[in-house]
Image (cartoon, rainbow, N blue to C red; front, side, top):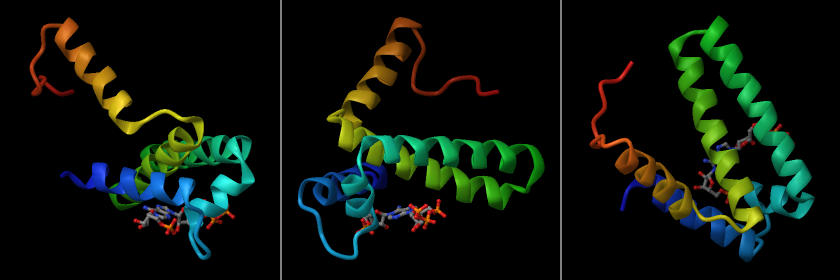
Length: 103
Ligand SMILES: N=c1c2ncn([C@@H]3O[C@H](COP(=O)(O)OP(=O)(O)OP(=O)(O)O)[C@@H](O)[C@H]3O)c2ncn1[C@@H]1O[C@H](COP(=O)(O)O)[C@@H](O)[C@H]1O
C-alpha cells in the first residue's frame, strides 16, 4: 500500500472515530467550513512557497495541503479512491499512460 493510501485510512478513521489528541479529529469536530478554510490557507502557503521561498518550504507546504485536502474529503464523504479514479480516468480519456512528458 502506498503511503498516501495509508494516510487516507488513518485520517478516515480519525474522522469516524474521534480520538483525544488527534489533530484530524479536532478539525473534523470544528466542521466542514473550518476544514475548507484550512485547505484555502494551506493552498495560499503553497503559492507563497513556490513563488518566494525555497524548495524545502514548497515540499513542507505541499505536504500540509495534501493532508488538509484529505481531511476535507473525509469530512465531505468523498473517498481518496474516488479522486484517484477520476485522475486515472482523465489519463485514459487523453490516451496517455502513467508517465507523461512532464513540464
Ligand atoms: N500528516 C499529517 C499532518 N500534516 C500536517 N498536520 C497538521 O496540520 C497543522 C498545519 O499547521 P497550521 O499551522 O496551519 O495549523 P495549527 O496552527 O497547528 O492548527 P489550527 O489551530 O490552525 O488548526 C499542524 O498542526 C500539523 O501538525 C498534520 N497532522 C497529522 N498528520 C497525520 O495524520 C495522521 C493522524 O494524525 P492525528 O489526527 O494527529 O492522530 C497521522 O498519520 C499524522 O502523521
